[in-house]
Amino acid sequence: MATMKAVVFERKDHIAVREVPKPAPGPGQAVIRITATTICGTDVHIVRGEYPVKAGLTLGHEPVGVIDALGAGLEGEYQVGQRVIVGAITPCGQCFYCLNGVSSQCGGPIGGWKFGNTINGAWAEYLLVPDARANLAPIPDGLTDEQVLLCPDIFSTGLSGAESGHIRVGDAVAVFAEGPIGLCATLGAKLMGASLIVGVDQNEDRLAIARRFGADVVLNPGDGDVVSRLKALTGGRGVDVAIEALGRQETFESALRSIRAGGTLSSLGVYSGKLVAPYEAIYAGLADQKIVTTLCPGGKERMRRLMAMIAHGRVDLAPLVTHRFALDDIAEAYDVFSHQRGGALKVALYPDRASMPARTATVVEGTDRDC
Ligand SMILES: [Zn+2]
Ligand SMILES: [Zn+2]
Image (cartoon, rainbow, N blue to C red; front, top):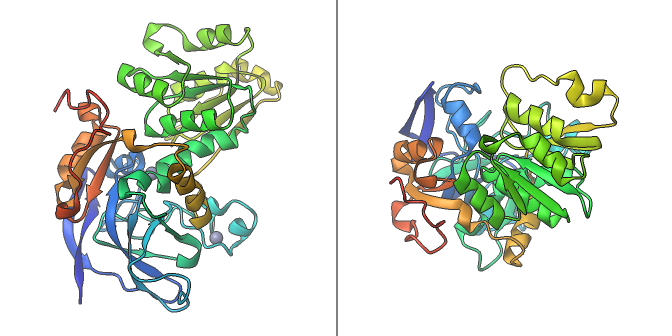
């Protein structure tokens, strides 16, 4: 049996590079050779045992690669050797949820998220892609792997926070936490036409990057109450839309307190434990406010749109990829990412060490400070 290298979840706080069977595609499935992938904050939740997955599962849900093999039924649609990305969420396109317009919930709650959750993921040399016709998205000529690396999850998720918040031209928007997802939400708020974007984070380096991604004002909670400062910036009313991009009670509550009557809290965070909404923050439940939650939109058409934004120069996500590692060095990569060492925002992982690009000028200034 052909084998391949993969990074598997063994138990809480333990991942390891292992030799595992190479997948073969069934009807409607494809296998891609992974050329680049990355680590997501959700993977950190998994490794820490905060989100359960089965032992032996290959992690990772952000695949960039080349089609290696196609199952029956895909002839004429794709070719072996074609460069593709696949969304972190892989909807089937045919179930109750997909056909009701919530394809991220394919098959049931959070069901669209399969890679590195319910099936083997992208931290491997090869990846089996289910429902390939709905999910293989060809990479436009001229775009590098790293340029599209954040489309499968971070860009799609961050942008969806702005989209689900239904930001209107002229809105005032606050983004709570400027990690990679918050930065993409900031970018999304700008693309949707917000007139005022306020980035909120405790990390001054991240606030500096938030300015580059479209924040007009940045607020550090360490400098005083964020909610009152947001109200002062909006005529005392509060922001039209607040995007929560961290998944903590404090940021959720601050986001809730910062929206105006009739405003929207668009939530992207992954929460654990109990989430509480104090009655005064929601005006006893009578202020026509909306709370919306969104899982990363996936599918090949979403991926095509995101890559078109990059191909046409509307957005440049390269500054978010601050570090590169060979997949074999996953332990070091995970340590750097999970502790945000050296100003790490996103780390690119390369299954083939020889194909790893040399460092370029796209690396954010000062990120090596702690290395
Ligand atoms: Zn993710
Ligand atoms: Zn479905």
